Length: 164
View 1 (spheres, rainbow, N blue to C red):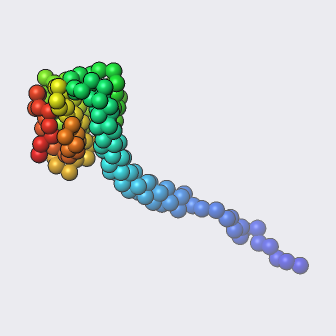
View 2 (view 1 turned 45 degrees about the vertical axis):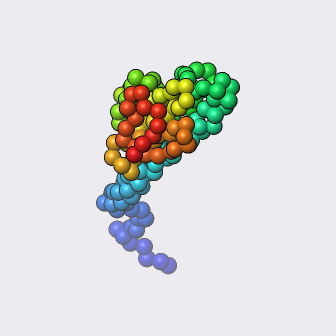
View 3 (view 1 turned 30 degrees about the vertical axis):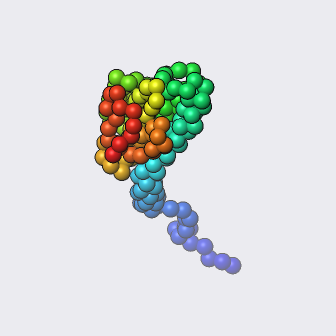
């Protein structure tokens, strides 16, 4: 016959301290992962802006072939406004696109009216949108009718070409 001591009972399970340590470790690991995802998210937004503006060149070429001028390519139906607007809305869903009179003003939040602008005349056009994570501080992605696509810090009112 087995002698069982009622005072000795072995309970299986974890102590409160062990559970708190595990929860703390998981919290630390989660914060590290989320911090790394923030940078990837910013780079993803920039990639979407660059792709949207890259597509605007082909659309502008179609617009030009239709009337042999770029006048109003930034605002007219069939022009590039929807593409530039879509790129700007990657920064802020309420963002708009400035016209020929609005100079580019860097704003990664997309709130400033100059954070996305599109300028056009009969022979040329240029569009720029602020970037979330630019290589050059306070710059945006600029594309123009000459085929230039680059990061730059300015596109003044009445300018129709991307320049460094």
